[in-house]
Amino acid sequence: MNASTLYPRLIQARLKEALADTPVVLLAGPRQSGKTTLVRQLAAEPGVRYLTLDDELTLLSARQDPTGMIRSLDRAVIDEIQRAPQLLLAIKKSVDEDRRPGRFLLTGSANLMLLPTVADSLAGRMETLSLLPLSQSELHGSDANWIDAAFAGQLLKVSTPIVAAALIEAVLQGGYPEAISRATSRRRTAWARQYIKAIIARDVLDVAGIDKLDHLPLLLRCLAQVSGQMCNYTQLGGQVGLDSKTAARYVGVFEQMYLLTRVDVWARNQLKRIVKTPKLQFIDSGLLATLIDLNATEIQQNRSRFGHVLEAFVYGELLKHTTTAEGDYRLLYYRDLDKFEVDVVIENAAGQLVGIEVKAAASVNESDMRGLKKLASVAGVQFKMGVLLYDGLETLPLGDGLWAVPLSTLWGN
Image 1 (cartoon, rainbow, N blue to C red):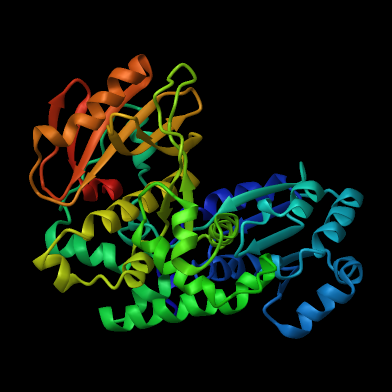
Image 2: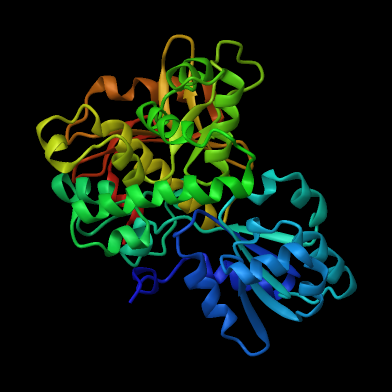
């Protein structure tokens, strides 16, 4: 059995809600994150046709006669829509004539909202939901949302915190169902390498006219080395023989493929001393670890490279929480010219903040709190809570709305 069928997906309830009142629903996320498994369950309903554009004949039909294909459908699931974006105008025409909810459920392995044709054609007719790789909450059978709880002034509890070697294992495994189904770390790494190759060889061509595909694997490895750091396109491009504009465009392609994301700096308008450069963050810690050749043996001997991968793991978990949260949240970071930093700053729609520092150790020092304290002083009444996530067992108050909290409370149950 495919691993993705074993774990209920928290987005499923949202998906059904959207299909009940919206003509077109797009489930977007990286390849192999479990989209097809989820939508095929919904496509099993009577009167719903399932089409995948990974099938060459279906893809040919979609590209040659998009209007004819859509005209023949009443209700349908169309998988991998980014392979034939010309279908979207035909879908628009169809739903303008018949606006019944739930007519088209689309999946896309590229962020279609970055393509101008999509933004224009389906505005007001389509709701987009995200399905990222499996969260630790889904793996551990928890439906509590860490971010909603934090903004309500609560910290989730966990009956048995996952620490040390077990935490390292979770971070290196990542969240892709296929990787999780592999029995050993060596087999997971083999899968991750093939996955990255396949995405570059096939999917990049669907979303970008790139003629130098041979630059992409090296650029991706260079980006992995600077995950969690501010992005200097000139420096990155120079390492792989690309100018800064081309490097920035290629990073945008990786972003469209949900491999990584640019994280903006939190700033208030009146603050003039904030550094404005975004930083790059990989979405899946397992893929990141593969790209930088990091394994459990090295981490146990030397944790120096583990910190950035752990930060990506936490960022990815929080990003997954934003997709199923009750509230509307943005994930940002903080850094000022005095080099005070906070790894993740979560902002809600009202402008309130929760700051998060990530520490790959079981001990907490006074110096670990300096970034959170600075953010609290700058944000003032907007600051709700500061949390230091660490590789320990106890949830302890550190004064002034600051807490040291076990990492595994992210998926408390």
